[in-house]
Every structure is written in structure tokens, then in C-alpha cells.
Length: 364
Image 1 (cartoon, rainbow, N blue to C red):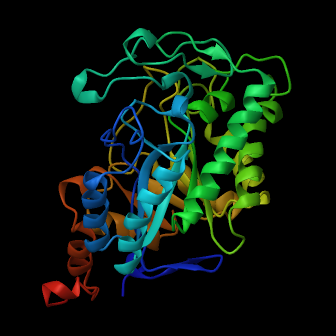
Image 2: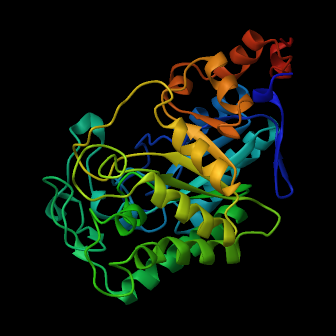
């Protein structure tokens, strides 16, 4: 068996292989009323197909911990009982296929209140069904409206919202929770000097800028079962100073290593290592494996398990990443949208014998 299709154990949970579905927003929940944020038949079919297709872990897209934390009004949410109950059907099916159900808990911060991409994207005015966004400082993302600066009381409410959503996630049957600290969303804007100009305990020094990330992690870990793993998704670099020739001050790979050590000490079991999203324009060298070195560095310098993500499309490529020790797993995104059965096809290509759904009557 190839390393890619060997199991991985984190705490008491064993994931059957290292090919995992990356959280990808589909913007397909109801936008208002009692069904707002509730997973639908679309979400069930979308996620169920990837579990049947052989992914070892299936992660639900960014799910708002608060209505104002949604990227768009059509995002999934996990702040009420109706949402929690609706997720149980999804988690049950994923587990029945032998896969692990996971969910990414998120607050979009200054990049919230936007239209679905097929409706043009961009911010929605509160008069048109959007809402006022929030962030560490009143610094806009590009031409988006400037967010309102969160007070310390509001920060405490955000932390509580993450913990409450994590509690609901476990009650809904999820076995992995991931805190979304990447891509220019709320936690990421606290981390980066590009989004954080505060002068209180949540801004200024590195130690202050990581405070929210650590406090959310502690709050989630307190309510998340000890025997189950907790992930954290990070943008390992803003692709600004420290990692490129761009002179703008930003979050760097070195900062990520420092943060990873602090997260590990607080009970994070794996760093889901992405990059970018903090500024609208940055010199990002997009190519296959372009983000893998950041996952490899964290793993090498901290011992914290990592997942690599981004333009991983070939079976041999994924196998090389994990077998060479650059990451413990690969998060497959767009390739799984193109082909829900990519993990099973990759196993066949690499010569691993993996069971297809028994209803299909054969194995490869």
C-alpha cells in the first residue's frame, strides 16, 4: 500500500487514508428565515458523493459561527438547533462510508456580507440584505467597505460563538472541527499587520496579534472532546515581506512556525496549511505544490502534523508529498469538484487496493 492510502491516527481517531476533501464554499443555503444557514439536499448530495468516492476525511465548507460571520447570506451556519439537526443526516452518511466527517468553523470578518460569485460577488449593502462587517481595525479589504472595529466585549462574543458552534458540531456527529484562521477572514486579519492596527491587547506585537487565535483555540478545545482532533487552517504567508520582494509588512512563514508551536501547546492536532487572501493583490507564485513548502516547514520545525493544499491534482504528486514527509495528508479541492471519485482512481493508479462502495459490486 502507498503512504497516501495508509491510515492516520490523531488522538483516538483513525482516518482511513491521507486524501481529504478540502472545505469549499458552495453558497447554497437559504439566505433568510428559519432555514437560513441550514444544509439542504444539495449539501447532502455534494458531501455524500465525496465520501462514497473514497476521501478519508470530508470537510464541510466554511460554516458561520454567527449570522454576521457568513461570507455570503447563502453560507451554511451552526448557531442554532435547526442547523445542528440538519447536519446529522450528513455526518451519519459520511461515517457509514467509512470516512470521517469534519467541519470548518468560520467568521468572515471584513470579507463578510458578499454576493455569491455567480451573482457578481462583491459586498452587499445593508439596505439590500447585507450587514455591517467587523474586524480588528477599520481597514477595508480593497474597495470593500471599512469594517467596524470590534470592542473587547464583541471579541469575547466571537470567542463564545466559536465555542458554541464547536459544541453543536460534536452534537451533530462531526469527528473533526477546524478553526478557520486563513484567507483574510476574521482571525487572519487579527494575525496580520495588514489588517490589525490595534493598540490594545489584541494588536501591535506578535504576541498580541495571535491572542484571538489562541483564545478561540482554547475555548473550542475546552468544549471539543479530548479524544477527538482539532485542526486549524492558516494562511502561512500573506506573500509580502519576509517571503517575497513585496515591501509591504505582512504575515510570514516564520510567523506561522511560531504560531504553530503555540497552537500545538493548546491542543491543535494538525495545521491545515494554505496561504494568501489578506490583500487583494500579492505576488503569489501559483503553480503545482506552491504551498507545500509551508506545510513541510511547520512539520519539520515543530513536529505538528500538517495537511498540504493547493493545485494538487495528480496521484503521484499527492503520494510524493506525503511519502517524502512534507505533509501528513493532502487536502484536495477543485480536483474533487471535477471528479468525486478521484481518491478511488488515485488508489488504482498507485496500485493500492481500496474498496469501492459495495453497492457498485467491485473493488480496485
